[in-house]
Length: 414
Image 1 (spheres, rainbow, N blue to C red):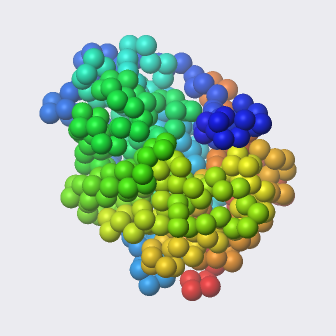
Image 2 (spheres, rainbow, N blue to C red):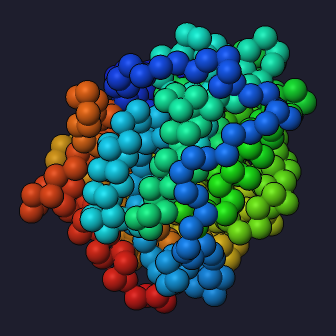
């Protein structure tokens, strides 16, 4: 999250926040021309099993909760944005097993991977947007088959995957909206209405959605991680989200659809007295309330980093309560799908947030982020991460394991 103009006093680490991970290890091989397929070309099927037995996640409208694994319940999850870019499948096995063993029911992973030049890409990528053209990468070591493996393994372990289909934030490789703009022109603000960019984006959406629509591992499709339109009327993102979410529903009637936004408010919503107005101005083109009212959006999302937005830690509890109230008014579930802190121990700041979640009717949460050292000494830690550590009383034990137990044990209607 780049907020230099908003909060210039923040450190570079804080500004780049959760999406500032270490570089991944070098790929085993790069995508070759024979592994690149243009839209309309012959798409290689997955070589791993996808579409096994299991329950699809659904919304219980009466309780504003999700039915997960055949049970209407509250849930806790995490973020592992990097999991589909992991070269060693044994690392995928290890991470998903540890998530399952922790009692976390879902994790959020990037289902996009954009580059403007596959020949110079430093890691896994799923599509190349170059010279006005679009090609999908099916190289076994650096392409979409890496994502196939994650989906297949998640099915085996009954872990649900939240799958953003693009990125409005440039902080993490591989790129998002910026890669489309580099190829088709325009700006990050015009991307939402640019015909060439939107045609390519929907080509990619259709590819991924149709590839995995038979999989019960998919919790939901998210249109974009942190969509933003600086200085735009909020109707730009709302109109775009209305069209794209409705389109996905025509391709896949079994899975839920969410926006993936940070949940910022816009006028006439007003900031509480004494609070920085940044999350309430609509200046990034996001109106949480209007977006949650889109018929083909099944649930609301919000992200929360008070220290980055010039807010007090205590304000985070207010922000949770505000989103809970909007969810009640609209009649849809709401999920806090990113939250974290640079502080240590993390329990000092994050435990009060989790207590507020438990007292609310927020349907679930995903802390940012799960991390540990994998093969080749790769560790995705970014300062906000919670390192996997099952030692009693550790940050991970309290904020992941104990919190997951409390959320899943919470009485429905309580």
